[in-house]
Image (cartoon, rainbow, N blue to C red; front, top):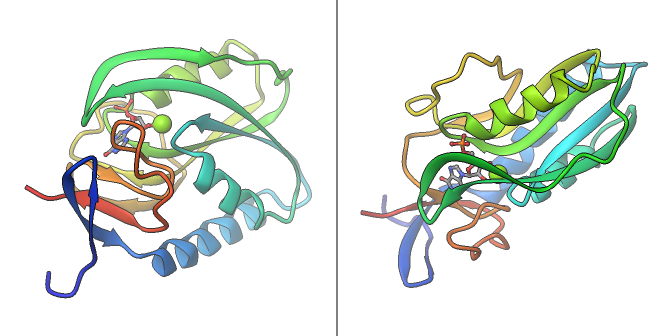
Length: 181
Ligand code: IMP
Ligand code: MG
């Protein structure tokens, strides 16, 4: 681990897990796949605030599609662990009926947030739902929803940076960091 960048967020030590340049290159690849898979089609992206705002912006600006983007705000995390309950802080205000939707989230842990978003899209009679997430914790994921575009599979450790927070802080870091110890 020598030479890897360390940062403190609210007094806790974090170590670099995915550097900025790798993230940006990986997002290039995800965007290229989405551009290819949806060429010539109209897509509505639904970003899940707060965590996904940075990933959503970087992914969306690389898209070469007739695309819209909207956001909902969901919360399932308190501190460094999942609560298992999803709260809707900002709801759905777009007509998504008969639309091809791609959900954008920062990270899937247990999958409660993703399941909540998917169930809410199903009752809105969308045509089809795909899912793009930057990070997936396979050791923690307990749902069967297919995740179509995954940036990285990571261990079950708590991470922050690039939109992801530790108690509200750390979102402005441009790399992903993992909690040490
Ligand atoms: P899930 O509902 O358990 O899948 O948790 C997903 C949500 O919790 C994500 O959208 C994040 O906002 C947040 N989250 C999960 N794991 C982490 C983490 O390691 N760091 C920061 N936020 C996380
Ligand atoms: Mg989130």
